[in-house]
Image 1 (tube, one colour):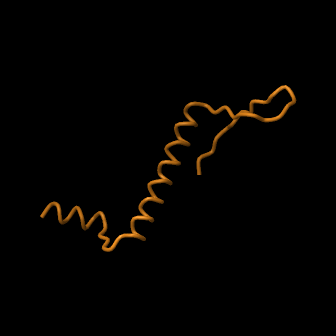
Image 2 (cartoon, rainbow, N blue to C red):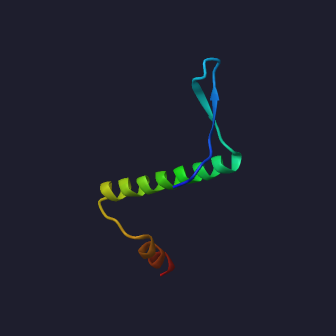
Image 3 (cartoon, one colour):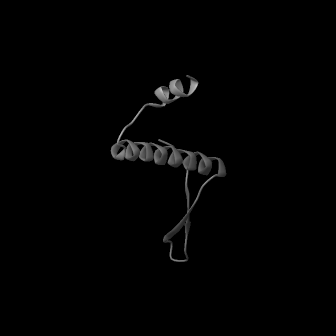
Length: 64
């Protein structure tokens, strides 16, 4: 899990209305979310595929 140090932006009544992140932490968070999306896409592809081969098997076939 990515740890972030967020800073809250509040309105005139003290209610939190936005979050401010350090750019480096924002980039790490985006990368983490992309990795999660890739994993979900792979899981969905496996569940709906008629036939599935591993990446290693694909590599072996392409080299042959």
